[in-house]
Image (tube, rainbow over all chains, first blue to last red; front, side, top):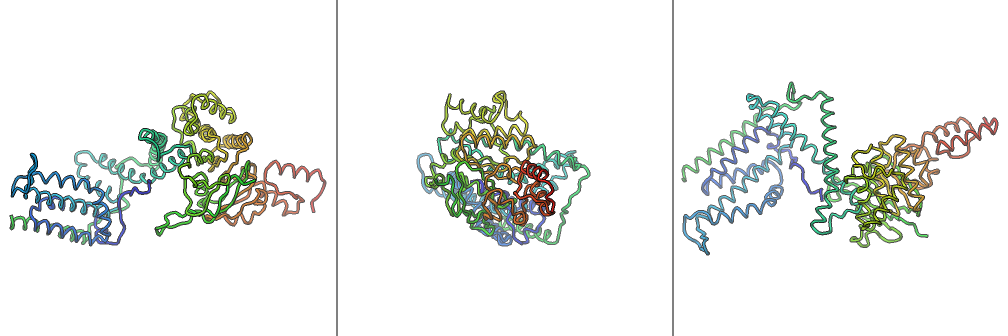
Length: 270
Length: 289
């Protein structure tokens, strides 16, 4: 049951997207999301769609992996699509029912919004599929590093370190949970059967030992870090250096061309 | 009489449909008689823990069967809870499964899950504590205030309070001091003697195995490499060291003496045996060849 939890989403292939600098990828992701939402007609939306398709192909991550992510939030997509049907009163009236009127403008609105959400999810999955969780937290730390001018240097470092540790300990905790579950099952706890209240009660013998061992682990880790002279961001360097290479610049350029393309199409057809 | 526990051609494959496919337990068969203490030895990763988790139905075999009193434990999957009450399993570091506010409640947890209530439950807990020499003063304490060795004893008592006919221990003495080890071994022997229970123990401590186990199962790379009396298994030191295991230190010393020509006939497994043999040797005059 716990084996289904995918931790992070990193999917190893040897694509050019994997090699890109994580910081560049994050900035480009934000840029692309903004422009996907700026695309306001069929042609510019197709351009966005084509661009996202290109990135999918370049990432060499199988299409079904992206579809899996989409499927996970299908209810949200459907819900948004249906709600949006009733908004907007432009265009021809298609049908009306009680106080609700659906217009052609509403339908188009809904299709556009759905398409944008789908693109948004796919392009965000590209980032998580092609970047290891550690690179992601490193990139966040570096992107936030200008905050040091506000005297927040240690805060940024602490935040990033917390994220790294949290990610690192997910598999450990999953394993621990499994062990404790087995031990309590051996003492006759039944997780699969029984009324809702009984099942919720059955979680207590798992959660308490898990909580206690997490606290214990946290103390141990903190002590081990202090023994190795960890004292926050002060004087700390990295083993892994990020370097901007030609393909980082190239990808940034291509993304800018894409954004200009959206603006151009919007302008021409708008 | 039929064996109480019988394992037939048990195989367990992890990640069967992936490239990480791995047979943790491979075609293992053995049977255990009522009242026996059987040790399971094998180096890390040899499949011992996977094997014992099958015996009370925590894992389902990929193929093969487990018979308890002649009946397949998976015959009725809904009744697996009853199997778990009759075949107790004490995990490695069982003190990490303690969770109740008081020691009393924690020991009562297992029997309660089996449906014991009121006075019955109370007698069960006090009886268990009496038998296992757990101080009644402890019962109202929080289990988290106890020392490591005490926590371990309370956690083991929690499984013993279910009165399983077969009780399995996964490294019950790992990480304990000599006093704690002695106490836990005493608990196991007490329980066995009081209820004629069958005991299976996984351990890396050959001295303790030599002292307590009637027979030994030797696991190697997921297969059952040997299943024989403790004496016979430890008499083949070469076989054991070939698969990364050893014999008790005292056996090694006596073997060295034997190879130097001292006339000791018995297979020596415990310090007491060794003392006896050496005294006999001394009193028997000069047998130095």
